[in-house]
Structure formats: C-alpha cells, structure tokens
Length: 450
Image 1: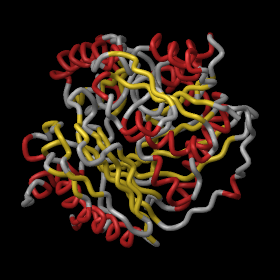
Image 2: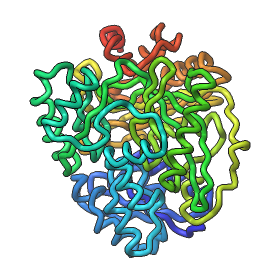
Image 3: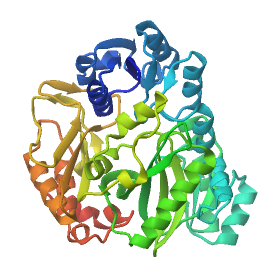
C-alpha cells in the first residue's frame, strides 16, 4: 500500500479523495493554484504545494509542475480525480516514466479509449452493441455519404473528447457542412485534435452507465448501473442508481460492459456508457476515471470506489467478488452549481458568508464549501454534490428534497431551487425521463420564487 498520494485536482473531488486516503492511513499532498490558497483541500491535506497561477493551464493542467511536486514531496502515486489531467494519456505516461503510480488505467488505455473512433472499433471487435455510424474519423465527403445512408438526424462528435464539446446535431444534408466544420473547430480548441466521427442520433434516449472495477490480475466486476438522463447541454445535472430498466436489459448491459472491459484489458475504475431506447442499448463511450456521480453507487453498494482505485493501483487483488456486490435501496445525486439559472445559468462566483450542510440519515454532501470561503471565478461552477439514499426511489426523492430545503449557501446564487423544481416535477417523480427532460420542461423548472 502507498504511504503518500498526491491529488492532482481541486474542489470537492480533492476533499473526497483526501478523506478516503486518511481512512486508509495514507498521507496526502494537495496541489493548488494561487487562486486556491484558502481552498478546503489545501487545509485538509498533510502537505500542500502551489503549482502556478489561477489559470488552469498554468496550474492544474501543468503536468511538469505537478510531477515535480510529487517527486519533491516523495509521493508514490498520483490520483487525478476527474476533469483536468484525469484522461490525459500524456500525463499518465509521464507518471510511468518517473516511476510514480497513476491511479487509473495505463496511458495506452487512456489513449485508446479517449479516442472515440478507436474505442468504437474496439467495442465492435468485442461484440458490444454500437450506435450506427462511421466507426472511425470522417472527412466531409465521407460524412455526408454515411449520414445519408443511416438517415438523419445524426451527431458529429469529437474523437478526442466528450462533455458535449465538439458535438453538433445535424437534421438534414443542408446543415451538414457548416456543422461539420464548427464541430472540428470546437474540437480543436477543446482537445487539440480536430478529428470527428459520425453516429446516428437516437432521439430522447436514457443515458445509462455501468460502473466497473478491474484489477491487475484480469479480475473484473460491475457495481451496477446509474441513470444519468437528466442533462442540460450534454452536462449531467441529476444522477441516480439503480435505473428503472427491466432486469433482463440490465443483465445484458452488465454482460456487455464486462465483455468490453475484459476485451481491452482494462484496469482500475471506469464506466461503460450506453444510450437506451425501447429496451435496446448502444455503447457510446468509456470513461477511464472516477465519475462525478460515483457516490450514488457507493450509497447503494456500501463500496468506497476511491479506496478500491487506490488498492488496485497499489497492486492488490480485488477482494470483492461479483457475488459480494449487493444493491440496497435507491440513491439520487444533484450537482450544486454556483450559477444563476434565471440568467442562462450564468456562473456566480463570490464570497460565501454563510454555509450550512444538510444532516440526516442517508444524506451525504461532497463539497469544498465553508463559511467565508471565496468561490473563485476561474474554474467549473460545481461547488458540491448532494446525495440522498432511501429504501426506494420515492423515498430517496423525498429525502433529497428535505436536504435541499435545509441547504444554505448565502448570498451566492446557486441552482438549488432549479434542482428542487426537477425533484418536484410530476414526470420526474413518475420516472418519465430522458435526455431531453430539461429542454422539455425548462419554463416550468425556472418558474420558482427565491
């Protein structure tokens, strides 16, 4: 087991990783930008190293400074969290070169699964169901032909990334060329790679992901699935586990996820993501990192995924078998963002003069907030995640509503009331959800008084 781990991240995920490290008896090193000198993860870690200015490219994306901090402090491993360098094959490779364990898959695996066209080919070889499409990078002429063959609407998607960047929905041939070049330009700016591929657009599906764990000894298991269908502009807003899919569909999806992981020789934690329509599921991507929404899986399984990541990276065999994985009740997570939904979700950094965290059985909040903390304007708007567990889905919804009512973050505007409107929505309560839910209900969801 490692003696010291550096966390190459910030915010609530850095705090979350520090907590698991402490429970394992592992010393921690925080890294921080000059804008994060007073951040909670800096206070909680055993050591802290400033790695650059407020700009992410000079700090949290500065590979050389982070590696230097690890070497200087004697950290044996680096946990990248999510975002920033977590899916950068170059960073994982740098760790390998200096004999520091990267807590995640190998650089080769990140590169293969990070390139969506390569990932699709690997999944095709593994026999995993795929959305009809190009299965490889396209040029304009090829894209137009394939789009006409499979039928509109289609999605043009960045090969080197996700999160909705470098993605364009095209409903007819006349729109194709402009969308093609716009997607390439955005992909180049976001990921440094303008490659794009094409797939059939499945209208209003559910977005389901299967959590997997795999050790260095070819042992692979799943921790069930999460429904991440409540999204805004391809960014997840509400996540829950388990989904309401039929049991036979779930079992087939688990089998496909395990087959995919075994086929590519995957190691560590990851998710296989699918879209589901009319009980048919299709692979869309594999995420080679811990997910923002991992707590809902932890709540229903009792398994600390961060701890399992660390154990796997240290060379331990999985002590959990598939039979050990039991699902208890239902859990729902909402992402708390410092933003103003009524002004087009405009980010709202600022001083938190008073912060109260909800309490109660089955309630968990992962956050970096505290009273008198100044939320900086330079990073993602998410400041925490509120999670509730219940004996069933309705019980979890009620528990989460109560927790949201108790949450106080003043005077910074947040999406707290917007999230409450989702939880109160009749279609949400009756589980009539898909990826277009927010778009369909946006006027009602914004009709709240603060």
